Length: 311
Length: 311
Image (cartoon, rainbow over all chains, first blue to last red):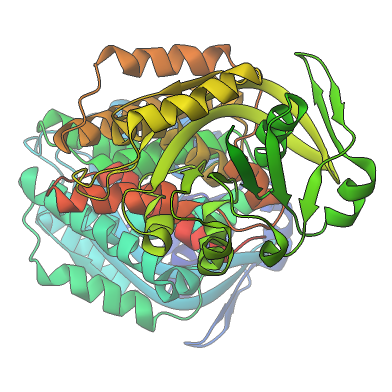
Protein backbone atom coordinates (compact mmCIF):
# COMPACT_ATOMS: atom_id res chain seq x y z
CA UNK A 1 0.00 0.00 0.00
CA UNK A 2 1.24 3.47 -0.88
CA UNK A 3 2.38 5.66 1.97
CA UNK A 4 1.31 9.25 1.25
CA UNK A 5 2.57 12.59 2.45
CA UNK A 6 0.45 15.68 1.94
CA UNK A 7 2.35 18.96 1.92
CA UNK A 8 -0.01 21.86 2.36
CA UNK A 9 -3.26 20.97 4.03
CA UNK A 10 -5.49 23.71 2.67
CA UNK A 11 -8.60 23.56 0.50
CA UNK A 12 -6.99 21.09 -1.90
CA UNK A 13 -4.59 19.00 0.23
CA UNK A 14 -7.11 18.78 3.05
CA UNK A 15 -9.80 17.52 0.71
CA UNK A 16 -7.85 14.86 -1.17
CA UNK A 17 -5.74 13.86 1.83
CA UNK A 18 -8.85 13.68 3.99
CA UNK A 19 -10.54 11.33 1.50
CA UNK A 20 -7.46 9.08 1.39
CA UNK A 21 -7.17 9.02 5.19
CA UNK A 22 -10.87 8.28 5.59
CA UNK A 23 -10.49 5.31 3.23
CA UNK A 24 -7.73 3.88 5.40
CA UNK A 25 -4.66 4.89 3.38
CA UNK A 26 -1.57 5.81 5.36
CA UNK A 27 -1.36 9.60 5.06
CA UNK A 28 1.07 11.95 6.78
CA UNK A 29 0.08 15.61 6.77
CA UNK A 30 2.51 18.51 7.02
CA UNK A 31 0.74 21.58 8.44
CA UNK A 32 1.74 24.92 9.81
CA UNK A 33 -0.71 26.93 11.87
CA UNK A 34 -3.37 24.18 11.99
CA UNK A 35 -1.13 21.35 13.25
CA UNK A 36 -1.99 21.56 16.94
CA UNK A 37 -5.73 21.91 16.32
CA UNK A 38 -5.96 19.03 13.83
CA UNK A 39 -3.89 16.73 16.04
CA UNK A 40 -6.54 17.14 18.71
CA UNK A 41 -9.70 17.50 16.64
CA UNK A 42 -9.02 15.72 13.37
CA UNK A 43 -9.91 16.80 9.87
CA UNK A 44 -13.41 17.80 8.84
CA UNK A 45 -14.80 18.03 5.29
CA UNK A 46 -18.23 19.44 4.50
CA UNK A 47 -19.26 18.23 1.07
CA UNK A 48 -22.43 17.98 -0.97
CA UNK A 49 -21.27 14.39 -1.57
CA UNK A 50 -21.54 13.77 2.19
CA UNK A 51 -19.82 15.40 5.16
CA UNK A 52 -17.14 13.45 6.95
CA UNK A 53 -14.75 13.68 9.84
CA UNK A 54 -11.40 11.91 10.25
CA UNK A 55 -10.84 12.02 14.01
CA UNK A 56 -7.25 10.68 14.09
CA UNK A 57 -4.74 12.02 11.54
CA UNK A 58 -0.95 11.92 11.36
CA UNK A 59 -0.02 15.56 11.74
CA UNK A 60 3.43 17.14 11.66
CA UNK A 61 4.67 20.64 11.78
CA UNK A 62 8.29 19.68 11.05
CA UNK A 63 9.13 17.68 7.97
CA UNK A 64 12.10 16.06 9.74
CA UNK A 65 9.71 14.20 12.04
CA UNK A 66 7.86 12.63 9.14
CA UNK A 67 8.62 9.15 7.75
CA UNK A 68 9.82 8.59 4.18
CA UNK A 69 6.83 8.37 1.88
CA UNK A 70 6.14 6.66 -1.46
CA UNK A 71 3.99 9.40 -2.91
CA UNK A 72 4.36 12.98 -1.79
CA UNK A 73 1.35 15.05 -2.74
CA UNK A 74 2.44 18.66 -3.18
CA UNK A 75 -0.60 20.82 -2.48
CA UNK A 76 1.06 24.15 -1.70
CA UNK A 77 0.44 27.07 -4.03
CA UNK A 78 3.25 27.42 -6.55
CA UNK A 79 4.05 30.82 -5.04
CA UNK A 80 5.49 28.81 -2.10
CA UNK A 81 7.83 26.70 -4.23
CA UNK A 82 10.93 28.38 -2.83
CA UNK A 83 10.50 26.21 0.31
CA UNK A 84 10.71 22.91 -1.62
CA UNK A 85 14.48 22.40 -1.18
CA UNK A 86 13.83 22.24 2.58
CA UNK A 87 10.63 20.21 2.49
CA UNK A 88 11.10 17.50 -0.10
CA UNK A 89 14.46 15.77 0.54
CA UNK A 90 13.69 14.58 4.12
CA UNK A 91 10.56 12.80 2.81
CA UNK A 92 12.21 10.93 -0.06
CA UNK A 93 13.45 7.36 -0.20
CA UNK A 94 15.09 5.78 -3.25
CA UNK A 95 11.79 5.18 -5.01
CA UNK A 96 9.63 8.08 -3.82
CA UNK A 97 7.68 10.14 -6.33
CA UNK A 98 6.12 13.58 -6.00
CA UNK A 99 2.65 14.37 -7.33
CA UNK A 100 2.43 18.10 -7.98
CA UNK A 101 -1.16 19.31 -7.65
CA UNK A 102 -0.60 22.94 -8.59
CA UNK A 103 -2.11 25.30 -11.14
CA UNK A 104 -0.22 26.40 -14.22
CA UNK A 105 2.21 25.01 -16.74
CA UNK A 106 5.54 23.34 -15.98
CA UNK A 107 4.97 24.08 -12.31
CA UNK A 108 6.70 20.73 -11.76
CA UNK A 109 10.04 22.34 -12.70
CA UNK A 110 10.68 23.55 -9.16
CA UNK A 111 10.07 20.06 -7.77
CA UNK A 112 12.12 18.41 -10.49
CA UNK A 113 15.00 20.75 -9.71
CA UNK A 114 15.01 19.39 -6.13
CA UNK A 115 14.31 15.67 -6.62
CA UNK A 116 15.73 15.13 -10.12
CA UNK A 117 14.12 13.84 -13.33
CA UNK A 118 11.90 10.77 -13.54
CA UNK A 119 10.33 11.14 -10.11
CA UNK A 120 7.72 13.80 -10.66
CA UNK A 121 4.11 13.56 -11.79
CA UNK A 122 1.71 16.44 -12.15
CA UNK A 123 -2.02 16.61 -11.76
CA UNK A 124 -4.67 19.03 -12.99
CA UNK A 125 -7.32 19.38 -10.33
CA UNK A 126 -10.85 20.41 -11.18
CA UNK A 127 -11.92 21.24 -7.67
CA UNK A 128 -13.96 23.94 -6.02
CA UNK A 129 -13.23 24.01 -2.30
CA UNK A 130 -12.30 26.45 0.47
CA UNK A 131 -10.67 26.13 3.83
CA UNK A 132 -13.18 27.62 6.26
CA UNK A 133 -11.37 26.98 9.54
CA UNK A 134 -8.43 25.02 11.00
CA UNK A 135 -8.62 21.50 9.57
CA UNK A 136 -12.03 22.35 8.15
CA UNK A 137 -12.63 22.18 4.39
CA UNK A 138 -15.77 23.05 2.48
CA UNK A 139 -16.08 21.14 -0.79
CA UNK A 140 -18.29 23.08 -3.20
CA UNK A 141 -18.11 21.31 -6.54
CA UNK A 142 -16.15 19.04 -8.88
CA UNK A 143 -13.11 17.12 -7.64
CA UNK A 144 -11.51 15.38 -10.61
CA UNK A 145 -7.74 14.87 -10.87
CA UNK A 146 -6.08 14.22 -14.22
CA UNK A 147 -2.47 13.20 -13.65
CA UNK A 148 0.46 12.24 -15.81
CA UNK A 149 4.23 11.84 -15.77
CA UNK A 150 6.21 15.09 -15.88
CA UNK A 151 8.75 14.92 -18.70
CA UNK A 152 10.55 18.26 -18.41
CA UNK A 153 10.35 21.47 -20.43
CA UNK A 154 11.00 19.61 -23.69
CA UNK A 155 8.56 16.80 -22.90
CA UNK A 156 11.44 14.39 -23.55
CA UNK A 157 12.59 13.18 -20.13
CA UNK A 158 11.34 9.91 -18.70
CA UNK A 159 8.72 10.41 -16.00
CA UNK A 160 7.27 7.89 -13.56
CA UNK A 161 5.82 4.91 -15.42
CA UNK A 162 2.13 4.73 -16.22
CA UNK A 163 2.03 1.50 -14.17
CA UNK A 164 3.24 3.44 -11.17
CA UNK A 165 0.60 6.10 -11.71
CA UNK A 166 -2.09 3.45 -12.19
CA UNK A 167 -1.42 2.19 -8.66
CA UNK A 168 -1.85 5.69 -7.22
CA UNK A 169 -4.94 6.21 -9.34
CA UNK A 170 -6.43 2.96 -8.09
CA UNK A 171 -5.92 3.93 -4.45
CA UNK A 172 -7.43 7.34 -5.12
CA UNK A 173 -10.41 5.80 -6.89
CA UNK A 174 -10.93 3.47 -3.92
CA UNK A 175 -10.97 6.54 -1.69
CA UNK A 176 -13.73 8.07 -3.82
CA UNK A 177 -11.49 10.47 -5.75
CA UNK A 178 -12.34 10.81 -9.45
CA UNK A 179 -8.74 10.33 -10.58
CA UNK A 180 -7.60 9.66 -14.14
CA UNK A 181 -4.21 9.34 -15.81
CA UNK A 182 -2.84 10.70 -19.06
CA UNK A 183 0.39 10.17 -21.00
CA UNK A 184 0.26 13.84 -22.03
CA UNK A 185 0.45 15.97 -18.92
CA UNK A 186 1.50 19.09 -20.82
CA UNK A 187 -1.52 18.82 -23.09
CA UNK A 188 -3.78 18.40 -20.05
CA UNK A 189 -2.15 21.47 -18.49
CA UNK A 190 -2.74 23.56 -21.65
CA UNK A 191 -6.36 22.47 -21.77
CA UNK A 192 -6.83 23.64 -18.20
CA UNK A 193 -5.08 26.93 -19.02
CA UNK A 194 -7.87 27.58 -21.51
CA UNK A 195 -9.99 28.31 -18.44
CA UNK A 196 -7.41 29.61 -16.00
CA UNK A 197 -5.77 32.16 -18.30
CA UNK A 198 -8.96 34.02 -19.24
CA UNK A 199 -10.92 33.79 -16.03
CA UNK A 200 -8.28 34.00 -13.30
CA UNK A 201 -6.78 37.07 -14.92
CA UNK A 202 -9.92 38.91 -15.95
CA UNK A 203 -11.52 38.35 -12.56
CA UNK A 204 -8.59 40.20 -10.97
CA UNK A 205 -8.10 42.87 -13.65
CA UNK A 206 -11.82 43.63 -13.96
CA UNK A 207 -12.44 43.01 -10.24
CA UNK A 208 -15.40 40.80 -11.04
CA UNK A 209 -16.89 37.35 -10.72
CA UNK A 210 -16.90 35.06 -13.74
CA UNK A 211 -20.64 35.29 -14.29
CA UNK A 212 -20.47 39.08 -14.62
CA UNK A 213 -17.62 38.71 -17.09
CA UNK A 214 -19.75 36.28 -19.10
CA UNK A 215 -22.77 38.59 -19.01
CA UNK A 216 -21.23 41.73 -20.51
CA UNK A 217 -20.80 41.53 -24.30
CA UNK A 218 -17.33 43.06 -24.42
CA UNK A 219 -15.76 41.10 -21.58
CA UNK A 220 -17.44 37.96 -22.89
CA UNK A 221 -15.94 38.54 -26.33
CA UNK A 222 -12.58 39.23 -24.71
CA UNK A 223 -12.76 35.99 -22.68
CA UNK A 224 -13.49 34.09 -25.87
CA UNK A 225 -10.57 35.74 -27.71
CA UNK A 226 -8.28 34.76 -24.86
CA UNK A 227 -9.52 31.17 -24.90
CA UNK A 228 -8.84 31.08 -28.65
CA UNK A 229 -5.37 32.50 -28.20
CA UNK A 230 -4.50 29.97 -25.50
CA UNK A 231 -5.69 27.14 -27.74
CA UNK A 232 -3.73 28.48 -30.73
CA UNK A 233 -0.63 28.90 -28.60
CA UNK A 234 -0.94 25.32 -27.32
CA UNK A 235 -1.39 24.02 -30.86
CA UNK A 236 1.59 26.05 -32.12
CA UNK A 237 3.63 24.59 -29.26
CA UNK A 238 2.72 21.11 -30.48
CA UNK A 239 -0.13 20.31 -28.09
CA UNK A 240 -3.16 19.83 -30.28
CA UNK A 241 -6.52 20.85 -28.84
CA UNK A 242 -9.68 20.46 -30.89
CA UNK A 243 -11.27 23.77 -32.00
CA UNK A 244 -14.59 22.77 -30.43
CA UNK A 245 -12.99 23.00 -26.99
CA UNK A 246 -13.26 26.82 -27.22
CA UNK A 247 -17.05 26.67 -27.33
CA UNK A 248 -17.08 23.95 -24.68
CA UNK A 249 -15.18 26.26 -22.30
CA UNK A 250 -17.63 29.11 -22.93
CA UNK A 251 -20.66 26.85 -22.38
CA UNK A 252 -19.08 25.28 -19.33
CA UNK A 253 -18.41 28.71 -17.81
CA UNK A 254 -21.97 29.85 -18.57
CA UNK A 255 -23.23 26.88 -16.60
CA UNK A 256 -20.98 27.38 -13.58
CA UNK A 257 -22.46 28.71 -10.38
CA UNK A 258 -21.39 32.32 -9.69
CA UNK A 259 -17.84 31.69 -8.75
CA UNK A 260 -14.80 33.65 -7.68
CA UNK A 261 -11.60 32.34 -9.22
CA UNK A 262 -8.91 31.22 -6.80
CA UNK A 263 -6.69 34.00 -8.12
CA UNK A 264 -9.30 36.62 -7.28
CA UNK A 265 -9.76 35.20 -3.77
CA UNK A 266 -6.00 35.26 -3.26
CA UNK A 267 -5.78 38.78 -4.65
CA UNK A 268 -8.57 40.16 -2.48
CA UNK A 269 -7.09 38.45 0.59
CA UNK A 270 -3.67 40.00 -0.06
CA UNK A 271 -2.02 36.64 -0.76
CA UNK A 272 0.50 36.12 -3.59
CA UNK A 273 -1.13 35.29 -6.95
CA UNK A 274 0.10 32.59 -9.32
CA UNK A 275 0.97 34.87 -12.22
CA UNK A 276 4.24 33.16 -13.07
CA UNK A 277 2.91 29.60 -12.91
CA UNK A 278 -0.11 30.35 -15.09
CA UNK A 279 0.90 33.25 -17.37
CA UNK A 280 4.68 33.52 -17.15
CA UNK A 281 5.26 29.82 -17.84
CA UNK A 282 2.77 29.79 -20.71
CA UNK A 283 4.55 32.78 -22.28
CA UNK A 284 7.96 31.20 -21.78
CA UNK A 285 6.72 28.00 -23.45
CA UNK A 286 5.42 30.11 -26.35
CA UNK A 287 8.73 31.92 -26.57
CA UNK A 288 10.70 28.65 -26.72
CA UNK A 289 8.52 27.67 -29.68
CA UNK A 290 8.81 31.12 -31.28
CA UNK A 291 5.07 31.68 -30.93
CA UNK A 292 3.48 35.06 -30.22
CA UNK A 293 0.67 35.33 -27.65
CA UNK A 294 -0.12 39.05 -27.52
CA UNK A 295 -3.21 38.93 -25.31
CA UNK A 296 -1.68 36.55 -22.76
CA UNK A 297 1.29 38.94 -22.66
CA UNK A 298 -0.99 41.91 -21.88
CA UNK A 299 -2.75 40.01 -19.08
CA UNK A 300 0.61 38.94 -17.64
CA UNK A 301 1.92 42.50 -17.56
CA UNK A 302 -1.29 43.88 -16.08
CA UNK A 303 -1.34 41.19 -13.38
CA UNK A 304 2.32 41.69 -12.51
CA UNK A 305 1.60 45.37 -11.94
CA UNK A 306 -1.61 44.76 -9.99
CA UNK A 307 0.01 42.12 -7.77
CA UNK A 308 2.37 44.80 -6.51
CA UNK A 309 -0.13 47.65 -6.29
CA UNK A 310 -3.14 46.41 -4.37
CA UNK A 311 -5.64 48.91 -3.10
CA UNK B 1 -12.84 89.82 -36.64
CA UNK B 2 -14.06 86.30 -35.96
CA UNK B 3 -17.07 85.91 -33.71
CA UNK B 4 -16.54 82.85 -31.50
CA UNK B 5 -18.95 80.62 -29.67
CA UNK B 6 -17.62 78.27 -27.00
CA UNK B 7 -19.79 75.25 -26.27
CA UNK B 8 -18.80 73.64 -23.01
CA UNK B 9 -17.02 75.95 -20.62
CA UNK B 10 -15.06 73.44 -18.60
CA UNK B 11 -11.32 72.97 -18.15
CA UNK B 12 -10.68 73.29 -21.89
CA UNK B 13 -13.36 75.66 -23.20
CA UNK B 14 -12.97 77.94 -20.20
CA UNK B 15 -9.22 78.18 -20.71
CA UNK B 16 -9.11 78.85 -24.45
CA UNK B 17 -12.31 80.90 -24.46
CA UNK B 18 -11.06 82.89 -21.50
CA UNK B 19 -7.82 83.72 -23.29
CA UNK B 20 -9.70 84.84 -26.40
CA UNK B 21 -12.11 86.98 -24.37
CA UNK B 22 -9.29 88.54 -22.39
CA UNK B 23 -7.60 89.51 -25.66
CA UNK B 24 -10.73 91.30 -26.80
CA UNK B 25 -12.18 88.75 -29.22
CA UNK B 26 -15.96 88.51 -29.33
CA UNK B 27 -16.73 85.26 -27.52
CA UNK B 28 -20.14 83.86 -26.61
CA UNK B 29 -20.14 81.13 -23.98
CA UNK B 30 -22.79 78.45 -23.61
CA UNK B 31 -22.86 77.15 -20.03
CA UNK B 32 -25.13 75.03 -17.95
CA UNK B 33 -24.82 75.07 -14.18
CA UNK B 34 -22.24 77.87 -14.09
CA UNK B 35 -24.14 80.41 -16.25
CA UNK B 36 -25.65 82.46 -13.46
CA UNK B 37 -22.43 82.60 -11.46
CA UNK B 38 -20.19 83.55 -14.40
CA UNK B 39 -22.63 86.22 -15.60
CA UNK B 40 -22.18 87.93 -12.25
CA UNK B 41 -18.57 87.12 -11.44
CA UNK B 42 -16.84 86.58 -14.75
CA UNK B 43 -14.33 83.93 -15.67
CA UNK B 44 -11.17 83.24 -13.67
CA UNK B 45 -8.07 81.36 -14.82
CA UNK B 46 -5.20 80.48 -12.49
CA UNK B 47 -2.16 79.73 -14.58
CA UNK B 48 1.56 79.39 -14.07
CA UNK B 49 1.76 81.70 -17.10
CA UNK B 50 -0.07 84.35 -15.08
CA UNK B 51 -3.49 84.37 -13.42
CA UNK B 52 -6.23 86.40 -15.04
CA UNK B 53 -9.84 87.38 -14.61
CA UNK B 54 -12.33 88.34 -17.31
CA UNK B 55 -14.99 90.28 -15.38
CA UNK B 56 -17.57 90.64 -18.16
CA UNK B 57 -18.35 87.67 -20.39
CA UNK B 58 -21.22 86.87 -22.76
CA UNK B 59 -22.91 83.99 -21.05
CA UNK B 60 -25.94 81.98 -22.22
CA UNK B 61 -27.71 78.97 -20.90
CA UNK B 62 -29.92 78.59 -23.97
CA UNK B 63 -28.37 78.30 -27.40
CA UNK B 64 -31.40 79.98 -29.00
CA UNK B 65 -30.48 83.23 -27.29
CA UNK B 66 -27.00 83.25 -28.81
CA UNK B 67 -26.05 85.09 -32.01
CA UNK B 68 -24.82 83.30 -35.13
CA UNK B 69 -21.07 82.81 -34.85
CA UNK B 70 -18.25 82.43 -37.37
CA UNK B 71 -16.28 79.86 -35.43
CA UNK B 72 -17.98 77.55 -32.98
CA UNK B 73 -15.49 75.96 -30.62
CA UNK B 74 -16.85 72.61 -29.50
CA UNK B 75 -15.32 71.89 -26.11
CA UNK B 76 -17.76 69.32 -24.72
CA UNK B 77 -16.54 65.80 -24.09
CA UNK B 78 -17.36 63.53 -27.01
CA UNK B 79 -19.57 61.50 -24.68
CA UNK B 80 -21.99 64.46 -24.93
CA UNK B 81 -22.15 64.48 -28.73
CA UNK B 82 -25.76 63.30 -28.78
CA UNK B 83 -26.78 66.88 -27.91
CA UNK B 84 -25.15 68.39 -31.01
CA UNK B 85 -28.25 68.27 -33.23
CA UNK B 86 -29.89 70.65 -30.74
CA UNK B 87 -26.89 72.88 -30.07
CA UNK B 88 -25.19 73.51 -33.38
CA UNK B 89 -27.85 74.57 -35.95
CA UNK B 90 -29.06 77.69 -34.06
CA UNK B 91 -25.48 79.00 -34.00
CA UNK B 92 -24.73 78.55 -37.68
CA UNK B 93 -24.87 81.08 -40.50
CA UNK B 94 -24.07 80.28 -44.12
CA UNK B 95 -20.33 80.47 -43.58
CA UNK B 96 -19.91 79.25 -39.99
CA UNK B 97 -17.36 76.60 -39.18
CA UNK B 98 -17.05 74.35 -36.14
CA UNK B 99 -13.70 73.66 -34.46
CA UNK B 100 -13.95 70.35 -32.63
CA UNK B 101 -11.56 70.31 -29.66
CA UNK B 102 -12.22 66.75 -28.50
CA UNK B 103 -10.05 63.73 -27.79
CA UNK B 104 -9.98 60.73 -30.08
CA UNK B 105 -10.14 59.92 -33.75
CA UNK B 106 -12.86 61.01 -36.19
CA UNK B 107 -14.69 62.60 -33.29
CA UNK B 108 -15.66 65.24 -35.86
CA UNK B 109 -18.07 62.75 -37.44
CA UNK B 110 -20.89 63.65 -35.05
CA UNK B 111 -20.48 67.35 -35.85
CA UNK B 112 -20.17 66.72 -39.56
CA UNK B 113 -23.39 64.71 -39.47
CA UNK B 114 -25.18 67.80 -38.13
CA UNK B 115 -23.55 70.64 -40.10
CA UNK B 116 -22.53 68.82 -43.28
CA UNK B 117 -19.16 68.36 -44.96
CA UNK B 118 -16.64 71.15 -45.51
CA UNK B 119 -17.46 73.13 -42.39
CA UNK B 120 -15.64 71.20 -39.69
CA UNK B 121 -12.10 71.51 -38.39
CA UNK B 122 -10.60 69.49 -35.58
CA UNK B 123 -7.92 70.31 -33.10
CA UNK B 124 -5.64 68.23 -30.91
CA UNK B 125 -5.16 69.98 -27.61
CA UNK B 126 -2.12 69.40 -25.47
CA UNK B 127 -3.47 70.92 -22.32
CA UNK B 128 -3.39 70.09 -18.65
CA UNK B 129 -6.14 71.99 -16.84
CA UNK B 130 -8.99 71.40 -14.38
CA UNK B 131 -12.17 73.20 -13.54
CA UNK B 132 -11.91 73.88 -9.82
CA UNK B 133 -15.10 75.87 -9.31
CA UNK B 134 -17.86 77.69 -11.25
CA UNK B 135 -16.14 79.71 -13.97
CA UNK B 136 -12.81 78.95 -12.33
CA UNK B 137 -10.13 77.10 -14.28
CA UNK B 138 -6.74 75.96 -13.07
CA UNK B 139 -4.19 75.71 -15.88
CA UNK B 140 -1.44 73.24 -14.94
CA UNK B 141 0.71 72.75 -18.00
CA UNK B 142 1.00 72.86 -21.79
CA UNK B 143 -1.69 74.47 -23.94
CA UNK B 144 -0.87 73.88 -27.58
CA UNK B 145 -3.58 73.38 -30.20
CA UNK B 146 -2.80 71.67 -33.51
CA UNK B 147 -5.77 72.07 -35.84
CA UNK B 148 -6.62 71.04 -39.36
CA UNK B 149 -9.54 70.60 -41.76
CA UNK B 150 -11.71 67.54 -41.15
CA UNK B 151 -12.05 65.56 -44.39
CA UNK B 152 -14.31 62.69 -43.37
CA UNK B 153 -13.65 59.00 -42.65
CA UNK B 154 -11.89 58.54 -45.98
CA UNK B 155 -9.83 61.72 -45.69
CA UNK B 156 -11.22 62.70 -49.08
CA UNK B 157 -13.85 65.38 -48.45
CA UNK B 158 -13.03 69.06 -48.71
CA UNK B 159 -12.65 70.73 -45.33
CA UNK B 160 -12.39 74.41 -44.45
CA UNK B 161 -9.54 76.03 -46.36
CA UNK B 162 -6.13 76.47 -44.80
CA UNK B 163 -6.56 80.22 -45.33
CA UNK B 164 -9.66 80.13 -43.18
CA UNK B 165 -7.83 78.23 -40.47
CA UNK B 166 -4.89 80.62 -40.67
CA UNK B 167 -7.21 83.49 -39.68
CA UNK B 168 -8.44 81.57 -36.63
CA UNK B 169 -4.88 80.59 -35.81
CA UNK B 170 -3.74 84.19 -36.00
CA UNK B 171 -6.46 85.37 -33.62
CA UNK B 172 -5.60 82.57 -31.23
CA UNK B 173 -1.90 83.41 -31.39
CA UNK B 174 -2.73 87.06 -30.64
CA UNK B 175 -4.62 85.86 -27.58
CA UNK B 176 -1.53 83.99 -26.37
CA UNK B 177 -2.68 80.54 -27.47
CA UNK B 178 0.06 78.36 -28.97
CA UNK B 179 -2.00 77.39 -32.01
CA UNK B 180 -0.70 75.67 -35.15
CA UNK B 181 -2.34 74.30 -38.28
CA UNK B 182 -1.81 71.10 -40.22
CA UNK B 183 -3.13 69.78 -43.53
CA UNK B 184 -3.20 66.28 -42.00
CA UNK B 185 -5.59 66.30 -39.08
CA UNK B 186 -5.98 62.50 -39.06
CA UNK B 187 -2.23 62.07 -38.79
CA UNK B 188 -2.12 64.57 -35.92
CA UNK B 189 -4.97 62.65 -34.23
CA UNK B 190 -3.10 59.33 -34.55
CA UNK B 191 0.05 60.88 -33.14
CA UNK B 192 -1.88 62.05 -30.11
CA UNK B 193 -3.48 58.59 -29.76
CA UNK B 194 0.03 57.25 -29.23
CA UNK B 195 -0.23 58.83 -25.77
CA UNK B 196 -3.94 58.64 -25.11
CA UNK B 197 -4.45 54.98 -25.98
CA UNK B 198 -1.77 53.61 -23.63
CA UNK B 199 -2.05 56.02 -20.73
CA UNK B 200 -5.75 56.85 -20.55
CA UNK B 201 -6.63 53.18 -20.65
CA UNK B 202 -3.93 51.77 -18.37
CA UNK B 203 -4.53 54.47 -15.76
CA UNK B 204 -8.15 53.29 -15.50
CA UNK B 205 -7.53 49.53 -15.84
CA UNK B 206 -4.59 49.52 -13.42
CA UNK B 207 -6.13 52.24 -11.23
CA UNK B 208 -2.88 54.16 -11.23
CA UNK B 209 -1.16 57.41 -12.11
CA UNK B 210 1.06 57.53 -15.18
CA UNK B 211 4.27 57.79 -13.19
CA UNK B 212 3.55 54.54 -11.33
CA UNK B 213 2.82 52.88 -14.66
CA UNK B 214 6.17 54.13 -15.97
CA UNK B 215 8.02 52.95 -12.85
CA UNK B 216 7.02 49.27 -12.86
CA UNK B 217 8.92 47.21 -15.43
CA UNK B 218 5.93 45.20 -16.66
CA UNK B 219 3.46 48.05 -17.03
CA UNK B 220 6.20 50.16 -18.59
CA UNK B 221 6.89 47.44 -21.15
CA UNK B 222 3.17 47.12 -21.76
CA UNK B 223 2.81 50.87 -22.31
CA UNK B 224 5.63 50.76 -24.83
CA UNK B 225 4.05 47.79 -26.66
CA UNK B 226 0.80 49.71 -26.88
CA UNK B 227 2.55 52.81 -28.22
CA UNK B 228 4.21 50.62 -30.87
CA UNK B 229 0.92 49.03 -31.81
CA UNK B 230 -0.81 52.39 -32.17
CA UNK B 231 2.02 53.62 -34.39
CA UNK B 232 1.92 50.47 -36.51
CA UNK B 233 -1.84 50.70 -36.84
CA UNK B 234 -1.59 54.34 -37.93
CA UNK B 235 1.09 53.47 -40.47
CA UNK B 236 -0.93 50.53 -41.80
CA UNK B 237 -3.91 52.89 -42.14
CA UNK B 238 -1.76 55.18 -44.30
CA UNK B 239 -0.74 57.76 -41.68
CA UNK B 240 3.01 57.51 -41.48
CA UNK B 241 4.62 58.20 -38.11
CA UNK B 242 8.38 57.99 -37.68
CA UNK B 243 9.58 55.05 -35.54
CA UNK B 244 11.50 57.42 -33.25
CA UNK B 245 8.21 58.85 -32.03
CA UNK B 246 7.74 55.73 -29.84
CA UNK B 247 10.82 56.56 -27.79
CA UNK B 248 9.88 60.23 -27.76
CA UNK B 249 6.51 59.35 -26.17
CA UNK B 250 8.22 57.23 -23.51
CA UNK B 251 10.75 59.95 -22.70
CA UNK B 252 8.07 62.61 -22.70
CA UNK B 253 5.94 60.59 -20.27
CA UNK B 254 8.94 59.98 -18.01
CA UNK B 255 9.41 63.73 -17.79
CA UNK B 256 5.79 64.58 -17.05
CA UNK B 257 4.81 65.61 -13.56
CA UNK B 258 2.83 62.90 -11.75
CA UNK B 259 -0.40 63.19 -13.62
CA UNK B 260 -3.82 61.62 -13.64
CA UNK B 261 -5.15 61.14 -17.15
CA UNK B 262 -8.45 62.85 -17.93
CA UNK B 263 -10.01 59.44 -18.43
CA UNK B 264 -8.98 58.35 -14.94
CA UNK B 265 -10.35 61.57 -13.43
CA UNK B 266 -13.63 61.04 -15.28
CA UNK B 267 -13.73 57.39 -14.23
CA UNK B 268 -13.09 58.10 -10.56
CA UNK B 269 -15.68 60.90 -10.59
CA UNK B 270 -18.31 58.59 -12.08
CA UNK B 271 -18.50 60.53 -15.36
CA UNK B 272 -18.74 58.82 -18.76
CA UNK B 273 -15.34 57.93 -20.24
CA UNK B 274 -14.36 58.50 -23.88
CA UNK B 275 -13.84 54.84 -24.80
CA UNK B 276 -15.57 55.06 -28.17
CA UNK B 277 -13.86 58.28 -29.31
CA UNK B 278 -10.39 57.06 -28.43
CA UNK B 279 -10.46 53.25 -28.69
CA UNK B 280 -13.63 52.38 -30.62
CA UNK B 281 -12.91 54.82 -33.44
CA UNK B 282 -9.27 53.73 -33.69
CA UNK B 283 -10.39 50.10 -33.94
CA UNK B 284 -13.02 50.95 -36.54
CA UNK B 285 -10.42 52.82 -38.60
CA UNK B 286 -8.15 49.76 -38.35
CA UNK B 287 -11.01 47.51 -39.38
CA UNK B 288 -11.79 49.63 -42.46
CA UNK B 289 -8.16 49.18 -43.48
CA UNK B 290 -8.18 45.47 -42.62
CA UNK B 291 -5.56 45.99 -39.94
CA UNK B 292 -5.40 44.02 -36.69
CA UNK B 293 -4.74 45.82 -33.40
CA UNK B 294 -4.97 43.09 -30.76
CA UNK B 295 -3.80 45.08 -27.74
CA UNK B 296 -6.00 48.11 -28.47
CA UNK B 297 -8.88 45.65 -28.79
CA UNK B 298 -8.16 44.18 -25.33
CA UNK B 299 -8.00 47.64 -23.75
CA UNK B 300 -11.26 48.61 -25.46
CA UNK B 301 -13.08 45.55 -24.16
CA UNK B 302 -11.70 45.94 -20.65
CA UNK B 303 -12.66 49.63 -20.55
CA UNK B 304 -16.16 48.97 -21.88
CA UNK B 305 -16.67 46.49 -19.04
CA UNK B 306 -15.16 48.75 -16.39
CA UNK B 307 -17.19 51.78 -17.53
CA UNK B 308 -20.32 49.85 -16.63
CA UNK B 309 -19.07 48.21 -13.44
CA UNK B 310 -17.55 50.91 -11.28
CA UNK B 311 -16.78 50.14 -7.66
